[in-house]
Amino acid sequence: MARRKKIYEGKAKILYEGPEPGTIVQYFKDDATAFNAEKKDVIEGKGVLNNRLSEFFMSGLNQIGVPTHFIKRLNMREQLVRSCEIIPLEIIVRNYAAGSMSKRLGIDEGTQLPRPIVEYCYKNDELGDPLVTEEHIAAFGWASQQDMDDIVSLALRVNDFLSGIMMAVGIRLVDFKIEIGRFYEGDFVRLIVADEISPDSCRLWDIETGRKLDKDVFRRDLGSLTDAYTEVATRLGVMPKNAGQFTKPTLIN
Ligand code: UDP
Image (cartoon, rainbow, N blue to C red; front, side):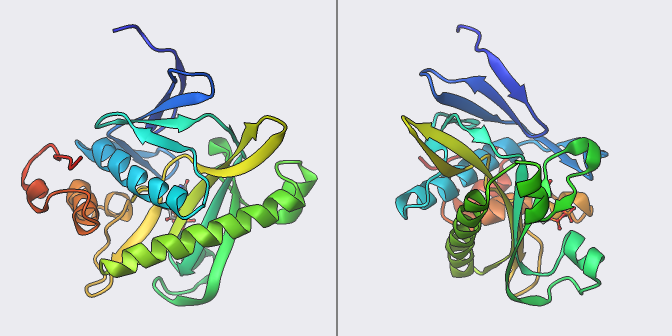
């Protein structure tokens, strides 16, 4: 097989040049990192699960008219996506207090917020992705005010969509992070949801028991990350019920 050109390697994914101009192959690794890569491990099967789950969420978003970079899944670990220019912001939407918000504001984890809150962090590993305001974003030219308005409405649509499908399978969407890209279509620029949507980038709690089904299992040493992600995939119907008993997850096509 011809060697592909690697464009970028991040903590959890590798991007390769796609088969056609304007496309990229996104490969999901098994590597797990937390606390700005201070904690690292390889979790067998995580990449397969996240590839499948991100496909599920992104294709659902495409179907309800929220544009994303997702084109199609290619195999167990790879998906074809549209090439776009990533805005250097992490867009966080919170429905319940947890993680850094609980710490920063002294609110107990799990407290329901009066309404969904959208936060921006500047994507910069050296600085530990600091929280920034719209003032910083406009002043430093990372996005225009119009972009930010569009980003907030996209983020809230993603929140409603994800909250609904999670609620239907007994899971609470506590918070999540998305990234947004600029996609050039002739003379037009569109903002699209990019990167990934998976339990690596969401907080997901079982509604009945409060069991964590997301990357906090790894961050806080709460057990098997693959079991947690397999549980999410099984409930959403993207994995067979018995998949958890195998080391390597089996996909339903
Ligand atoms: N998140 C992420 N990548 C990051 C930072 C946060 O995917 O680099 C997600 C995280 O999984 C959670 C949400 O964004 O679902 C809010 O994270 P928080 O700010 O509470 O940070 P943390 O406590 O994870 O450091």
